[in-house]
Amino acid sequence: MKRRTVSILGATGSVGTSTLDLIERHPDRFEVVALTAARNVEALADAARRTNARLAVIDDETRLAELRQRLQGSGCRAATGKEALAEAAAGEAEWVMAAIVGCAGLEPVMAAIEAGRTVALANKESLVTAGALMTQAAARSGAEILPVDSEHNAIFQCLAGNRPGDVAKLVLTASGGPFRTKSRDEMAAMTPEQAVAHPNWSMGAKISVDSATMMNKGLELIEAHHLFGLPSERIEILVHPQSVIHSMVEYVDGSVLAQLGSPDMRIPIAHALAWPERIDTPAQRLDLARIAKLTFEAPDFERFPALQAARSALEAGGSAPTALNAANEEAVSAFLQRRIGFLDIIGIVLETIARTGVSAPQSIAEVIDIDRKARAMANNLMREMAA
Ligand code: NAD
Ligand code: MG
Image (cartoon, rainbow, N blue to C red; front, side):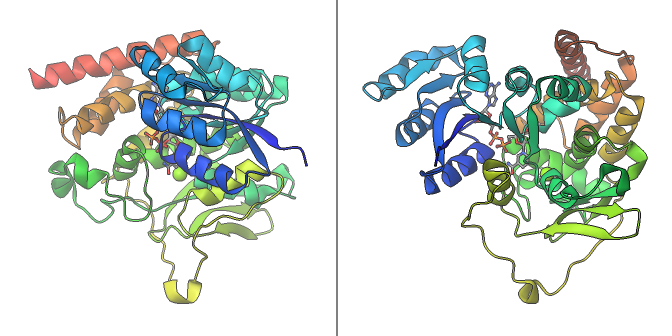
């Protein structure tokens, strides 16, 4: 059998290492072409050697010499810079895992889409910030976008074999994050350590903070709109603390299809990796008798204003989600560096959106410009706050 050639953008992160774990369990099915990382040369070189990758790209150019040295004799080329990243995304690999965190992943994802690759999309921020341009490009090139985010992967699975016109609504489930039962007053004092301690999932720092504010679910609402083409009012958010049902699709006849599984990202990653086939994973099997109870609650929009902020940005359209995402990335990063408090994150996001007008970007270059201005605005606001 011909092996599927794969590239992993963001190979050293949480999703990236889970992807590598699956690939290394199935050496007969996958052949690694390229791997990329921001700064961790050691992990990148190690993964490149283990998988016989042909190209390793490091974002931090000051570490290129070290990467080259670590790869000596391996047959793997070390590189840095935008062009090398685009080569990793749109070069030889048929299948590309987009697992860079944040808007930094936008340009390589677009390169893979424009080259007609099968794109396994974990990097939700790229779709939030430039959703319409991205889905239009995929329609033009024939690129397949396979959702890796567990909720969207669940919906993708529940849609298979049904007509899009028969869908009544999507139900995105949310764990509620580590602060699900906390009051606003309690949240005000929460530290980065408390925010990244997710009850069910082990993830990168940025998405963990997004889970605590529930901005993650807000971003996922926008992501679902772009992936599945439904309007805001037909995408519902439902809190389900056990994270066993990963999302649901309700059809016009009243049938509701759900996808279940233990909360292990290797399940949705494996689905995208082998699609349209399936491969086995080491993920723990569901033991529903032991779990015994699945519970559900309506989301609390007062304690988690990020949910409404994201819904409003989706409904405003154009540049609003770009500004929301950019301000959120900057505010989360400031929170992780202890420059602002937990509740300031949403304050910065709302104020940045209020101060940026809504425009309709027609190109990725325009999106990047809006993103840059919104980041500058958010940082100005944080400086004002600190003064
Ligand atoms: P992470 O922080 O663990 O890893 C991010 C990866 O991107 C690393 O390999 C890092 O080196 C690379 N990177 C970061 N900044 C970069 C830059 N400026 N240029 C190039 N590379 C850069 O993040 P993660 O938790 O693996 O999340 C990755 C993406 O997947 C995010 O968009 C996240 O929302 C999404 N996602 C993650 C999970 C999860 O369980 N971790 C679940 C669903 C969706
Ligand atoms: Mg998710």
